[in-house]
Length: 194
Length: 194
Image 1: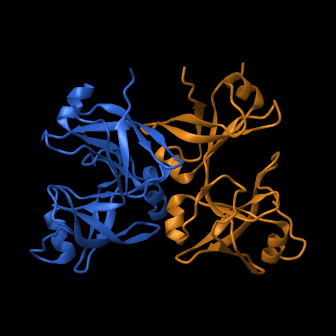
Image 2: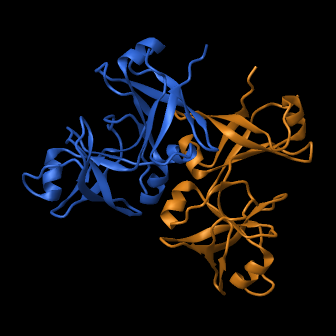
Image 3: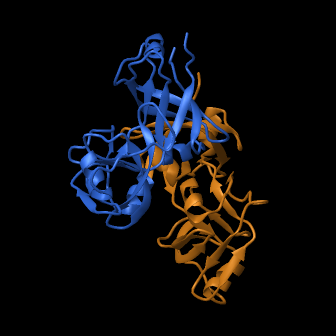
């Protein structure tokens, strides 16, 4: 049986961009490169500025590979600094969200939507999901243990991974990481009410 | 019986100062005034700048009345912005903590200690404490219910209030408030394991 204990990774503010947006920012034919070789989604070596009404964040990480939509994910603390009242949403659920201006060395793009605070979630291994009786889209409580700020995040959404070999990993934002006193990575477990 | 449900107040970064420090910043004989009349601790009408190695926060709130020690409380997010690696401590427990420079219109003071991230805590009515079997200094779990980010803060310290008429109130910082999706005030309850 798979252990109900997994990595919890803290995501700082970051961008997902379409290839089209990327080329406006960095030039025709530009390609994202991973900082280190990874399966699936990766941190790229490219950075862009993100300009809101109250502040501009320089050097915002761009995730690869490119997506079919543009999205800027930030923490609630960041929303007040940059001056954009973004909602808490699942990644990709961007209809009706505010936009922002993204600036690269070759050009800039003003997005008409795509600014969200990401809803905390767990990419759950399907075998662990089965053993816990969980399905895609379920909302669970996840305990994160840490030095002097342990806590239990309710309202954590299950994203079922496809591969039985996949590692379970939870993504939370910097506010949530700070509330739990973990900086980049911690350990979590799904709370099972017996 | 008193209800186990109380206000949870989100504290943004703020200063507690001695009368001596206050007079260096604002001039001889300067007095703090509350923004609105309050019993006990209050938000004053005075503000000062706080300068760290990486950033200066302007217009930081000064709490009144003056204390016997200087203290700058901030969130973990703020520690990275200002560039000070402050520990998580109970208010007043400032031995061995880093210092910072505080700047007012008449002068500035470089504190040799006093920068902390406040440990979450509950000022608990003594009658409610008795009914829950809790004493001063106990660590409890506190549930905060909110729209889409409910959570349970473990490692929450009990500060027993003296007066049986006192209102129970919990203080958390902005990172914790954001992790729970409450901006200024929410509602909490102490989790009782039966």
